[in-house]
Length: 139
Image 1: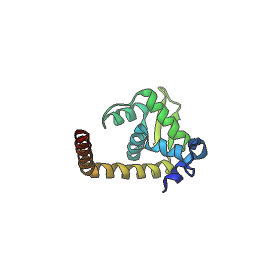
Image 2 (image 1 turned 90 degrees about the horizontal axis):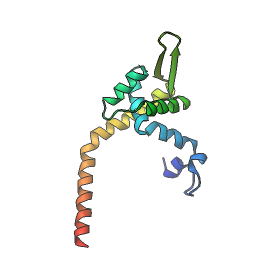
Image 3 (image 1 turned 90 degrees about the vertical axis):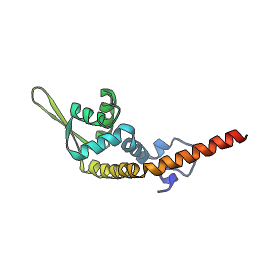
Image 4 (image 1 turned 120 degrees about the horizontal axis):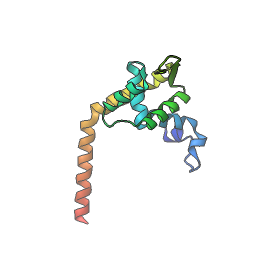
């Protein structure tokens, strides 16, 4: 996909979010917490606190506020289903919709590629940093 297709424009500097609604969905799906929520929900449905703990296992934990915002955004986009059960205490479960499962599979593929290719990325970073340092010393 061409960059202009993602931007939704032909290169002008207008408000591309307003001109290109799919760009917002792309941002939601690939956001720091969106990726982790989608991948976690691929395995099974979670209650809020379970999902928060599951995401925390992958590294730094997510705040309640950020997880709430992420879930609401993904629910609005039609990717996450929220089921509130009228029991005491109240129970709310989160799961993927069919659309969300499709998006999560794509995100999981990208995450797997990143993990697999990380040694190559690290080599490239070292080479870049060494070249920049050499250029800075030479000037």
